[in-house]
Length: 241
Image (cartoon, rainbow, N blue to C red; front, side, top):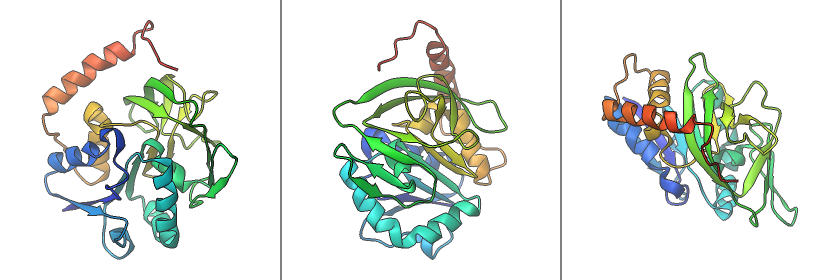
C-alpha cells in the first residue's frame, strides 16, 4: 500500500490543489491518503509514509505552518534524504527556505531545509501560463499556470523543477522554475497539476513503486494533455504578466 500524507488541507488548499492528491489516490492500485491537520502530529514523524503533499496557501498560513513544522524539521529533512517523494505546489515550497520577506522587509524565518529565500509583493500579482521541461531523465513537458505575489531566489542551476520554455522561472529574470532535490519537487505551479500533466503523474507513480502505472481516465487525460500542449507551444499565445 502507498501511503500519502496531505499536510494541512484545511489551509493549504487554494486553486483546486487538493485534486492532485485525489487523482493520485484514484490512479494508484492501493493507496491511503492521510489528511494531517494543524492540530495533529505529522504521521511522517513516527510512521512509514511514502509521499508528502502540500498545496498553495495564504501568506498568513505560511507563518502558521512554519511554526508547526519547526520541531519536525529534522524528520522532514530525513524524509527527503531517503529519496521519499515530496510534492509542494504553489507557494508551499517557500516554507522550506531560509526566510520569507514581506513588504515591510520583515523576515519570517523558514525551515532552512533548502537554500532559497522568498520576497512577497502583495501589490503586484504575477499571472502567467507556463510551459517547461521537467528536470529528469525523461524529456517530459510540464504545463501549468502561475498566480503569485512572491518570487524566490537561489542558485538552482542543477536543482530546478523545470526549465522554462514559456513563462518565467522562480523570478522574472530566471528560466529555472521551482526546486528539485532528490525526489522533493517544489513548484509555483498551481491547481490540479497532476491531472493536466498525466505523464508527470505516471513519473511520480513510478517513484512510488508502480512499475506499470495506469491513470484514472488515462486516455482522456493524455488526449487533453496533447491538445493543450499544442496550444501552449504556439508562439502567439498570450501570456499574462
